Image (tube, rainbow, N blue to C red; front, side, top):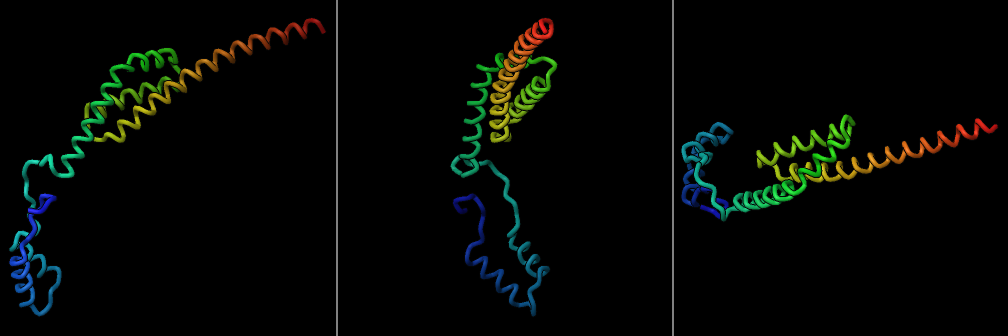
Length: 158
């Protein structure tokens, strides 16, 4: 077995395969596939995934990312839901609620750490933008009320 865990033919097996193919007048795909099947070249071996393999290390890294995301999410879930409640019935609130639902699915699934992290970042940015847009709306109402009041006074005096 090689370092990647694949079963490669030995030099003796490859020589046998070559000699079987050289007996034929021409080697086409059919001849090659026949010889390859005889020597089980395409056989898939099923077994345990070794932690020492590159794939095992990737699984460990993925698990670390999901553990970190879960830890962060437990600390901020209430804040995100509070922001979504504050922005009730707005497009931002709906988008934030959809992101929360997607993030929960990705955390439970544990298959795509990059997408889960992206969703987490979008929630953080969406929450900050939502807070900003709520403040801007409130400031806009205050400015409109002040301008509306000063505009009426100006019309009444003139």
